[in-house]
Length: 186
Ligand code: IMP
Ligand code: MG
Image (tube, helix red, strand yellow):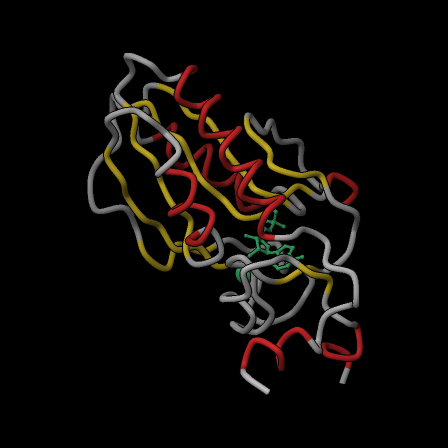
């Protein structure tokens, strides 16, 4: 049995989103962003590490000149519930003042990470700020947050794959599945 097969054993049997479903939706969002940002000075910011897989797929579906930057944020540790504390682990390389910024994130849960980032980047003088997330769990929101582009709204379950991790594992699964509770309860 190879590694992939081993990892799939930790997921509930039915995948939440297959690679085909994800790819189709990423194409749609890319097209929409291409239309919406035509003629703007776009900087896309990848929120490491969870968004990295979505980011590399999405930017290739956006047919516009852009610059890229990367930021690493911590709010979780290895638990499955948010701590509410947001820390910048790696900051942007370049200033964003005057730029039209698009943040690319894997999932919005409590909303605390992105509401922190929104304020943080606006305070640095970004000309505009939009948010694209692959997944959204609206049931878990603790602070209000406007999401401009959302791939899929999902139920309140802990999911992994396509960049999303549990304790840094499973990011390389090409599909998204629900982690069996036995895996994080043991
Ligand atoms: P928020 O600040 O509570 O919105 O948390 C967002 C972050 O929590 C995401 O960037 C993920 O790293 C993590 N997260 C939330 N839900 C999940 C999940 O179901 N699987 C994996 N990571 C998650
Ligand atoms: Mg994470």
